[in-house]
Image 1 (cartoon, rainbow, N blue to C red):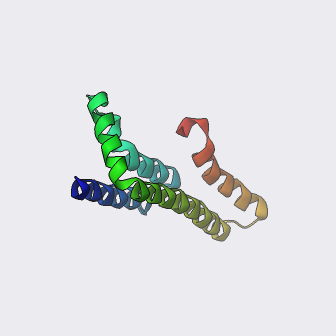
Image 2: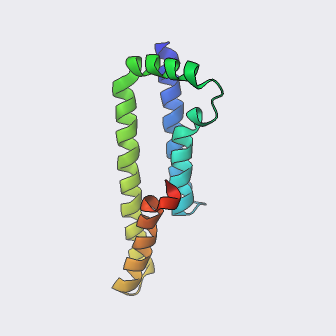
Length: 115
């Protein structure tokens, strides 16, 4: 069971960070894709009770790894927003333009449409 959980977490990390790294997608698409990848394994589960029991058993085996994975995702999203700010800086001729571009990136994360 531990090997299965470890492989699941490795796959989860890979697909999540792959979505964040898509250069051919917008910031919004990257963030949505990352969270979709992170949560996809639980979205279309038909037997939620059995899945919940399995998930609890898996969490007991990998609680530290899962917490680290969640922390890394949040850290990387924050870094992504920082990078978007830096990119906006080079695309902006004025502080007002930079502010507008940066607010778009922040809105992607904080807007009610993305929850």
